Length: 389
View 1 (cartoon, helix red, strand yellow):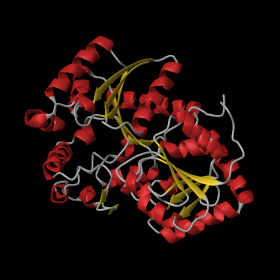
View 2 (cartoon, one colour):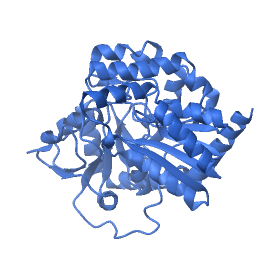
View 3 (tube, helix red, strand yellow):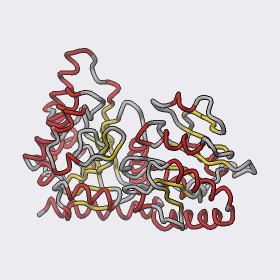
């Protein structure tokens, strides 16, 4: 099978980019011919002219459509898998595929197609106003990067393609990362029968381990962006009275909050190998997110390492984590509940050991590369049948 993978990278690399790289490698490892068409947002033009061009192209880029046609005619793919078209590639890639008769699969990594801010979050709280209402509401609040003008541009993209049936008619199969995410897109009017649920996966880090878990004092681990939506403030409030160590791997706009915090060690951005070593040594992972996470790759990494997860009971986390089996939930945004649950995990190593074994078992059952490959192939086949009909 020949597969054209389409991805618009963000200026700050994240889990989505890692998923694209892993899936591309997975397909190549199984003998498929894969070509990656990647645009990089770091190359966006600056200045007024550049911003105007970017705004016009966000809704529909004629230039990207021409590039897509050229790639389709040269590479002759059997399927086009779009991970992210925002903002440079734009939905015009779908029209190029329709003209050339190539089926399209679109992964829904976030909520951009129904929420200009992409996170269903506003002012630090979950917000679903744009699911059923007009996306132009986002302009009032500057939901896209705090900019009313930027929010208007993205809201126009969402509204235009909703009105013209782009999501209904030009994509053969969508991939939602969890049943919860699927439910939100269906609520927003996406065709339920076109949305498959396929989780992210991880190449097993314990098949060829480099080093092993060492005996260290118990510590909890946070891995991710140090930002409001990730629940950093709640986490630090909870840790103010905790005598055990919390290690934070990551950076973000709230880095300053980590300074001079008792029993909190800020490690900055680490390599995947360094994170893996930390997961072998940690007592549990903390995931205090306060927005509807898609499917954070760090969760799969934790399960792969047999690391229990202490997570906020919100959105997709309820689909992924089994409370009392692979992890423990706390009430979202409740620092006292988080502190109590963390204390319980530290104080009960035998129960942690059971959670650890369960987490590893779930990884082997649901999130391995082989399992993901078979699910992806089924989705590609369904998309091909849809286009043929």
